[in-house]
Image (cartoon, rainbow, N blue to C red; front, side, top):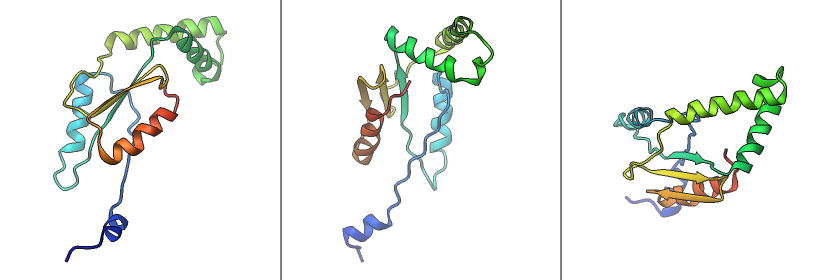
Amino acid sequence: GKQPPQQQQQQRKDRVAIFDATNSTKARRDWVLQECTSNSTKRTGVVFVESICDDKDLLDANFLTKVQTSPDYKDMDQQTAMADLRSRVKKYEEAYETIEDDTLSYIKIFNLSSKMLVNHIYGRMAKSIVPALMAWNIG
């Protein structure tokens, strides 16, 4: 027979996994999607999160924090480290492809959560992941 709602709720195990990687091209995101949805016995939902920052002051502050705390820059003076980081970011931007496929579930976060664009996010995801991302400074 059918179980009471409270028993159904107790048996359901909500799980969220965060795959933190640079999935900066359409081809890479297609691969992630295929890997997560190809197993017919345990289909996994996918939500892509894209952080976009075009606020120069925020970028400068973020870059400064990065060069002051990253082991990559521990033996460099600040000016050289900032130049190196800006060069790395420029190369990344040249290869980057923004998410444009509106059939995907995705969240775009602009300027450290000052604005969000949410596409195909419903139910528990909307109630849990979106508020968490709004509270975090992602950049």
